Amino acid sequence: MTIDSEAVNLKSHGGHIGVVVKDLDKTIDYYTSMWGLGPWQKLERSLTKEQLIADAVYNSPYVLKIGFAQWGSMKLELLQPVEGKSIWSDFLETSGEGIHHLCFDVSNWDEAVTQTKKQGARLLVGARTKEVSWCYFETSPGGLIVEIRTGGSF
Picture 1: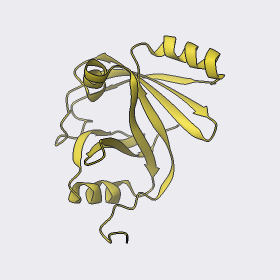
Picture 2: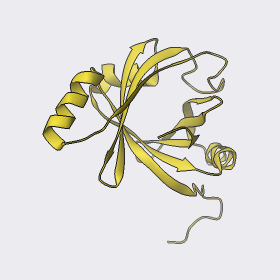
Picture 3: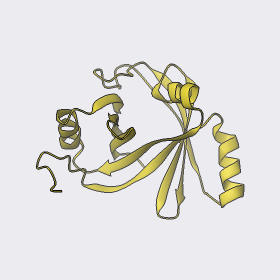
C-alpha cells in the first residue's frame, strides 16, 4: 500500500493519551498509588465562545479540570468536565470513563488542520488562545478521535 500524497503530515514531536474521568483528584490519587505516576500538573480551563472554533460540532463555553503526568515515554492527560455541555461531558454520559483521544503535538498546526478538513474528517471541538491551539477530529472508519495541538506547557 502506498501513502496518499494528500495524506495529513502531522510532523509530530510528541503528544499524549486523553482520558475522560468523573473525578480528577480521585483518579490522580489512584494512578499515583497504583502506578507511581507523578508529579502531576493540574489546571482548570474555561474557554469562551470567542476562543472556540466556530465551525466545530461543540462550540459552547465550558469549564474543565485537567491533569497531566509523564508515564514512561507517554504523557497522560486526565479530563474532568465541570460545567457546560462539551465533548467530554457527552463522552462521560454515553461511554463512562475511559480513553477519549490521541493527541499529536505539531509544528505545522494550520497546515495539518486544513489538510485534515480537506480529507473529510469531522471537526468536533477546538480553540485558539495566546498559549495553545488545538482541535479534535473524528475519524471514520476507525472510530478514533485525534487531537492536533501546538503550543502550551505540557
